[in-house]
Length: 149
Image (cartoon, rainbow, N blue to C red; front, side, top):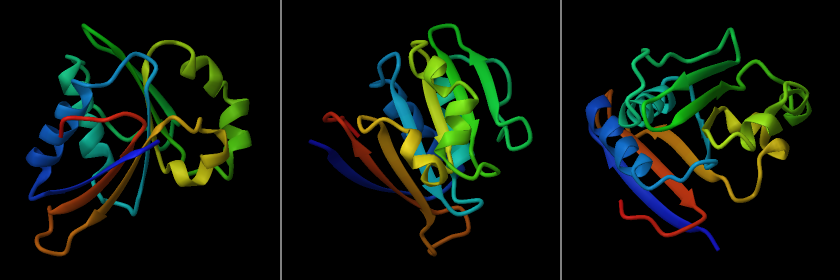
């Protein structure tokens, strides 16, 4: 059973606050599979998650390195950007299962490209600009368990 949440944020700060609110409820090994157009808020959301776990490095989209590992004071976060991949088999060949089994929170941007490699119990997040403001975002979260958002 999946639980669906529809949220709207007015700016980057609110997007990061929503991410931190979700991060408080994540468990080691949870996977966030994020989809949405360019500049729809995926990396901004990731920054909110890493900030919650006291990651000191600045979180960037790992487009040219594919994977960034962040070591927070309370939780490690793996940030994957699948934009330049062609399918889930490429992600599997990169050793994604090791990350899934590491106990880290795994965040995958452009998850729709590699969907066949993502477990069914992952959190699905879809981002889009809401059209109200340049920074406003609509974020739909499909969660494998009930959340307080």
